[in-house]
Image 1 (spheres, helix red, strand yellow):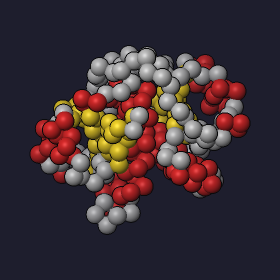
Image 2: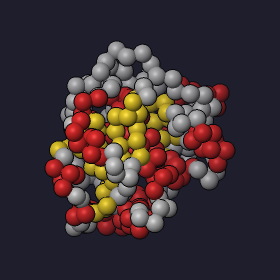
Image 3: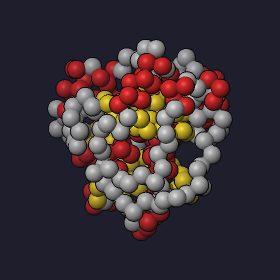
Length: 258
């Protein structure tokens, strides 16, 4: 199988992203007092980013920002909010991610770092937290988007949330045209996701078994430039899953990486 070309991996695009003095950023905000399992929060981040883009990409208030972000940045920053600040954020344009029916994370339309208001400036970075464990597995649906973390790369929880949001948006951009019916059913079903983890061997095997959207990090924080952190596959019925994907373990009882 081949990996579709990703314009964000072009060397010129990477250099332009790194060189930004006032970068365009999509801010992801975690509801600090409602932490589910790490796996559930990763899915919430992936779906919140897609909902944000679906709702606001073509809105007059945000179209210019999305255009600039997609062209120059694609950067995401993960923050945390207490209940008081979370309540204030509910008046912002956003896409929400849920865990067991409750909102736990929101994604805000892109803005430059200098355009942050006081609330966003005062929010602290989210890196880790006291995640719930031993929860029953969440229903992944009949044809979920599949998201895979590369366990060969060490990342904090906050970094992982940003990377999985990259992956879901990459998959939408790269595969939606050729899999229009699958994506339409996926959106109608509420954006179900199947989250897995892969060691180096499983990662390589999956990349050769299916068409994948791979996130390669620019190396601004935590990981070395070019590190492959997450990948995503188009929403697909289970009977079309490869054996390579079926063999991957779920993320369960996983301590945040740091």
